[in-house]
Image (cartoon, rainbow, N blue to C red; front, side):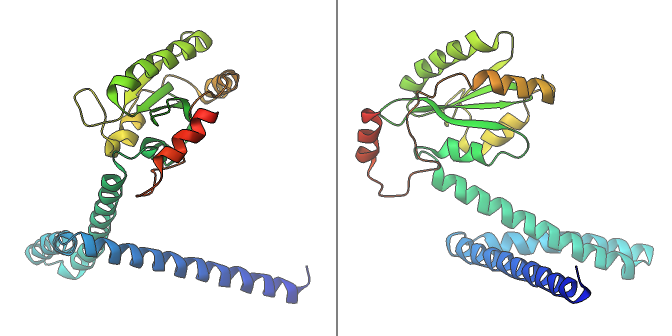
Amino acid sequence: MPPKQDKEALKAAAKARRAERKAKRGQIFEAFRMQRREDKALLPWMIGAFLLPVAVLLVAGLLLHMQWYLVPLGVLLGALAAMIVFARRVQRNVYSRAEGQPGAAAWALDNLRGRWKVEQAVAGTAHLDAVHRVVGRPGVVLVAEGAPHRVTSLLGQEKKRVARLVGQTPIYDVVVGNEEGQVPLRRLQAHIMKLPRNMSPSQVDALEKRLAALSNRGAALPKGPLPAGAKVRNVQRTIRRR
C-alpha cells in the first residue's frame, strides 16, 4: 500500500476508534441518568464506595509518610469501586424488571460469559413455559422457566429425551424462580458458571454435534423478556399453529 493511502487508513481507523469510545461513553452516561432517576440510593452508594478507599489510604499514607503515593492509588481504587457499585445496581435493576416475564431466563442465558452453546425453548407449552438447553464443560444444563406445576413435568420429559442420546454425560436441571429449590433469575448465570467442569473442549464439541440431532419441538418464545403490554395471546396463537 502506498504511504499516502497507509496514512489515510490509519487516520480512518483512529477516527473509528474515537467514535466508538464516544458512543460507549454516551451509553454509560445515559444508563447512569436512567438508573439515577429510578434508584435514589445510587449516588450515596457510589460516593461512599469512592471515599472509603481514599480515606483508608490517606490515613495509611499519613501514618507511613507516604500520602503522596497512596492517595492517588486510593483515588483510582475509589473510582473503580464506584463503577463496580454502579454496574451491579444497574444489573440488579435490569434483572428485577425482567423477572417473571416469559423469555427472561433465555435472555439471561444468552448473556453467559465464556463458551456455551444455548438452545432456547427446546421444549415448551402454549402458556409460554419453556425449557432451554445449555451445553458446556459441565455437560448439559436444562433450564426451565414458567409455572412450577407445568415445568416440572416438562423438564423431566426433556431430561429423559436428552439422556437417551448423551449416555453418561452429566445432566443438570434448573428451575428459575424464587421458591424453595429454585434459582432466582439474577443468580442464574452465577449458578451455571459454578457447575463443575466435567468435560474437555473436544468432548463438548462432540456433545454439541450429537445434540444437534434432536429436533427443536419447543415453543417459539421471543429472545428475551416480552415487553410490557405485549399481546401474550397472539404469541400463544402462533405457538399453537406450530
